[in-house]
Each structure stands twice: as C-alpha cells, then as structure tokens.
Amino acid sequence: MRCWDEHLLKGPPPAEPFPALVGITVHLTFARRAFELAGWFRSRGARVVLGGLHVLSRPDECAPHTDTPAMGEGVQIWLRILRDFERGRPQPRYCGSYTRGESGTYGDEPAPRREILPRGDFLTSASLIATRGCHNRCGFCYLATDGLRMP
Image (cartoon, rainbow, N blue to C red; front, top):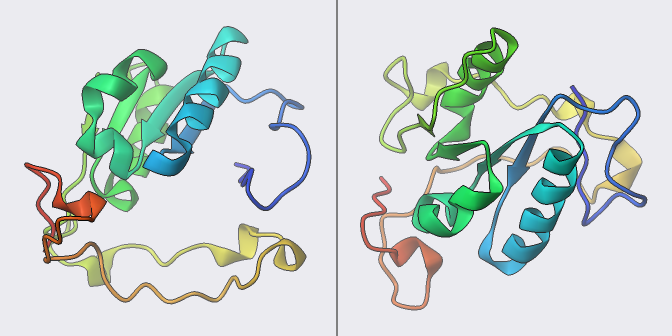
C-alpha cells in the first residue's frame, strides 16, 4: 500500500508499479480534481473507490467517477473493501456508520498508521483524532447536508 497526497507531495500520481485499486478522498473544494484523477487511473485499468464527505453528501454527482463509492466512516470499511477487491467480488457500495464502529465503539478501531507518512513532507504526523463528525447543523457548513447524521 502506498499513500500519496497531491497537496503536499510533488510529482505525478503513483504509476510504478501501477496500482490495481485506488482510493481517493473527495472534498467539495477539490472534487473536480478528484474526478480527473479517478478518470486518469480508471482509463489505465485501475479500479477506483471514492470516499469522503462529498461522496456521502453528493452520491449522484460522484457515481460516474467511481467503480465503488465508500459512504460514511472509512476506517470501518476499508479492510472489507480491500478484501472484496482482492477476491474479485467488490460490492456496489460500502457504508460505514458515524454513530459507532463495527465492534460497537470507536475505541476498538485501529490506530492511524502514521509511520507510513513521509515525516519531512508533512507539517505534523502526530495529529490527534478528537471526534468523528459534528452534531451541530450550522447553515454555512457542509456537515449540515440533509440526511447526513453525525454523533
């Protein structure tokens, strides 16, 4: 597995070795670029999973750009996505919950693997996950999208 962050790392998308499966997190501010990247990878034979808040709030807009959308909390479903693709049986959609982890609590979720981040390329790799989502519904915020429920 290889991580690449276009905002921080220089150079083109990873192509050697060419990935069979690519996951892209999509946010409103760079959705167009995420769709371009998805098209680039798909046109060369990679399968693309799109996830992130934009996919959750605008699934119809994102659908033409993905082989499989990942909706909701990705930590819960990413391992299942990898296993299903490895077996050649991907689901049409994966859904994680923001209300609790598969095992019942977020405390049971795996810790972030910060050691895979290149230390010199990021402001910090020792961030703290303090919450998952927001319960407020501020009118200016993306999280106020109808149907989006956060704890």
